[in-house]
Image 1 (spheres, rainbow, N blue to C red):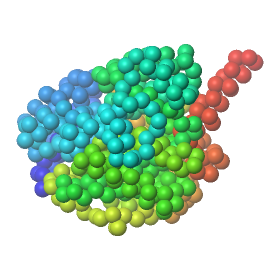
Image 2 (image 1 turned 180 degrees about the vertical axis):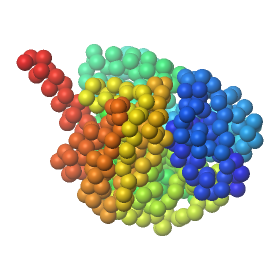
Image 3 (image 1 turned 90 degrees about the vertical axis):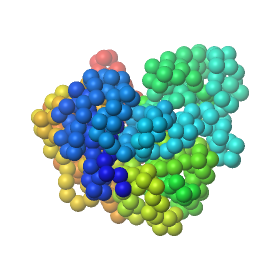
Image 4 (image 1 turned 135 degrees about the vertical axis):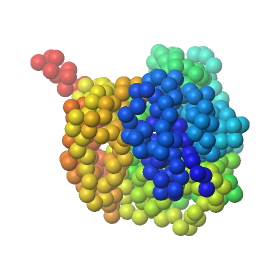
Length: 459
């Protein structure tokens, strides 16, 4: 058993990991930037060390500062959470070289899965279906236009090192493709330090389905069912649920088996997620692998009864998986709403600042994961998510009803949040029917707002 773990992250995920460690009897070391000095994870960690100035490049992405903190605190392991350095193979290698256990996959697995183009090629080798697209990266505009002619519009340009919706641009004609290609390269360079992109055929109205996998260091790899993450804004998830609406036992087993096969090809160890796009005929295509804990992991925890963060830590200690595939059964239904400090009525402008009022839901079958509280000041430097509401019910309808009750109980001010947007989404008949596509928000909310604004200008 580890005696002490450093958490190389901030906010809600740092709090989540501290709670898992405390239940396992493991002491924790929190790290913080100067902007996060009063954050909740700093208050509840057993120790806390300042690692730099507010910009993430000077703190949470500052590898020397993190390693120094780990050595000063004399920890045996580092948990990277998600975001920041969670999928950074170089960071994992440095941890290993310093005899500090990285709670995640091996560096070579991170590197292999992290290059989206290489990962696609690996999947094609083992017969995992992939979306038609370029073999490797696309070097110039001429090659991009040639591929678009081959596959037909629309196509999508994607950063090979992408994540969080960055470096993804859709094009419907030659002119738009050149712009999309150059913009995707620029975004990729700025976000990931890697401007390489590849091109895929763009699927119309697909669903975004991901499969949670777990693998120990003894060759055991299993899946824990799927999550539907199709409700997105600009490729960033807003709502996730498990099981996916409309998935029968046969389809769940099939996509799960493919996900396990993919994880084996990556020689994977620890927790990870295989992501797919699913068309209207339930054909599914490999999209990418996330080599880390996911923001939406709680919905899988709710329907399986398994603490995934504890499992990560136990795997990193060399333990065998605490469950087998035949023990995994999805019971009931779970849903997560991401609560962001953004103004949904003003193009989702960030809304940092001090929270004066913080009344969040309670009661049966509702879970709130958050690092915020009354009196907390949201810094403007990081992701805008301040909470996750997770509801659980015997079926999807009950789960939605519980979530709506929870959203109506919530009072957060004076900052703006996405609470009201979630209420609107959950009340939409199209959402209630299940199986919405990734363009649901654009089609039902963003387009609607543009039309209303244009009507107001015209009037």
